Image 1: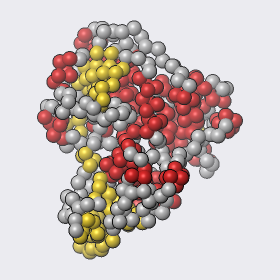
Image 2: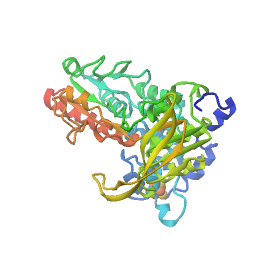
Image 3: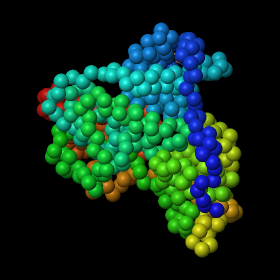
Image 4: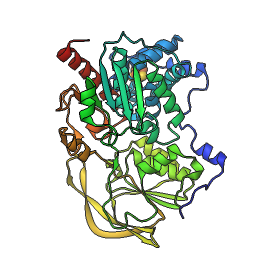
Length: 450
Ligand code: SF4
């Protein structure tokens, strides 16, 4: 039965505590940093989408140069603190560490990165200087990782930046869309404040594109525009029973967890989660941590094709989440308007589809799960109507940009999930940097001011 307040406060606190605690002491960080081999042509650096100089920042930790270490990280990734908590490092830097080749534990790059960057944020070190104003103004839509990263590069170059953000806080999915045990909303707020403290960046909250702000007005009022609007629409299952009470989309479920007291979040006793991406895992593990007695992830392919990482699967398994593979939702049945059963079709794998993975094909056989809550995490849909109405070139709603992040509209750039359809935070940070460089070139080439 869906209800809130299943646990006592200390249980909520324990269940949502930091999953990867920081180093307890300075010495512990130094010991780990000293394991690094400071590889030439370091593979860890190459596997970071923002190309953080990992051996350099680790070496700076070993010499107690924490300011230098934080600066090395922020030079490449101004959201380096948040990324140290949410990046799937097992498939990025730590997955590439040479220690893996020796069957030894890779260097704890993320934890070391967290060590330096959190110190910088806590101590409010101002590591960047703004160049004098160039009397140019850029509008950014979206204060998520792409928008913030773009804003910081531009602001450092003397550009005045105004960010229009539809929510009440910045950070995008970092603030509203990831599990509470990875990063807290309070931390995200500190990170946004740290980024804007460079100066020249104003954030206007409660401003949504197409509702409160309009692209043609931004083009008219600013010298350039960057769109970091993300992909925010949950993909419907398009099956019968989807509107019953107890059916919720994962992003909304996580958003509520991020914005309300944990004891007020209603969760079922027997919960099915549809999908196996990172959002599905975050929804399933948090449903369990909120007190659901059974949580089952239903996925239409096999474990081998899963979009989430092995580490995320492991977290879910340790939380007691069950998995049903090769199963797709067919219908949700209810009584008195409330969810009671999820009917699934058994699938088999056919030929590869556009994603390169073998496509699930129905066997015609069905089975049912007794559930009182269904969480939909079958992916997100780009803002197709919004971008069509704004005459922006796109493919199925994903904005089309050139190598500098420029869209088909003069002076309008874009990056992050709105372009790539939804990847990691670190990819959005890099897209924001690329867009900022594109904007600086545009202002320089067209207007000759920078
Ligand atoms: Fe250090 Fe591993 Fe990177 Fe080599 S690959 S520089 S050992 S973190």
